Amino acid sequence: MKNLAVCCLLWVIIAPQTWALGKFECYHSLGDATRSLRRGKEEIKELINRPDEWVYGFCTICSGWCFPPDYDFYFKGGASSFNDFMIEYGAVESLRHRMVIHSGTSAVTIPEEGTWCRSGHVEGLEVPIDWKFRFQDVDSPTAESVFDSHIDLWMGGNVELEKIRIPDSIRIESD
Image (cartoon, rainbow, N blue to C red; front, side):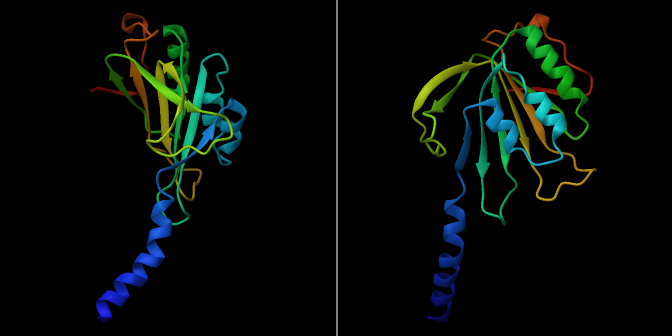
């Protein structure tokens, strides 16, 4: 009986925290996205500040004690735009650099502005994308903090494989 009481108490404490996992903060505008990033990420703000290629972005939201947030930013453009992005990405020293090349195409579903998105249950406008930039924040960033990041590139869209140039500092993988 004592074990049951302990389990019930743990459930009451932990369950509300785990329900917060899988919720997203949606960024319908580039301004919302850049304002959402914490101080100390000026290089990342400059990297995503691409009004001509910007499509959408979101951030996973967790309660204070769980994992740091993940940020996803979606872009559309040709090889020239992608090459410019990759040069800037490769120069951001606070990021671990990795790129994953995918066949086919991809799209992101953008919910109506003002709605709260939830993982896997988003209804809205589906927009084609060419690449995605993802990075994971850290709880207490310091000047030496390095953030996990990667770029997903889909080869069935506007970016032609034979025209892309990838800096040497970026590790390349394929799915």
